[in-house]
Amino acid sequence: MEEEKYKTLFDKSTVGIVITRLEDSRVVDANPTYQAMLGYTLEELKDLTYQQFTPEKWNDAEAEIIKSMLKTGFGIEDKEYIRKDGTIFPVALRGYIIKDEKGNPEKICAFAMDISERKRAEEALRESEEGFRSLFDGVPIGLYRTTPKGQIVDANQALVQMLGYSDRDSLLGVNVTEIYVNPEDRRHELPLLERKGVKHSELQLRRQDRTIILVQDNARTVQDAAGRMLYYEGSLEDITERKKIEQAVLKELEYRGE
Image (cartoon, rainbow, N blue to C red; front, side, top):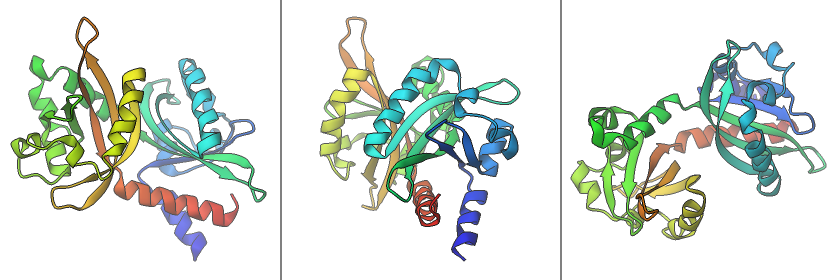
């Protein structure tokens, strides 16, 4: 029964799932969504390492991510993949270390999503003052701008709906710290964001009706010509249900000793 439940989660997930060996980076398994995303069959993927369908420019960053994952067990990154037909597209990966029966890191289970739409949305955010307002408001991904003090200076309709507000003006009247379940998260993250210029993280946010959702925050800093901080901008994606699926798959992998 547990085997059937795992198989259903793995095969029916709309998120791409891939399992690779730490030892040689070779693909061990991949669900149909992941296969379709890259245009390879499972047997073809098993003959490849993930580096073979990743543009070379990502190698150094990926090595750093894996080094960090070996310490924390988890990592988030945006990168690119190369499809079988040679086209390159952006993906968001959420990876987890899988240990063997002795507790040693053995594999990585990664959940992958094509984020072409998100990248277009973020580009619309950057160009929203230049005639792209309809695209900014029309994309299904939450977009925002906030000041260093937490004032929300812009938000699209998707974010208003995600957070359960009646209209954009109601959301703009709220300081972002009032939305965080743990306001300290923002205080801890801002120095990292300002140092690196970008960040990807998971946050718990409180909707207007006080229910809690888990989101992935993809943020960057915006500065003026003199290098002074103007605001932070980025995208928010509700990953509450996706996280439940990830945890169920990971739990079953551990149960199976994968």
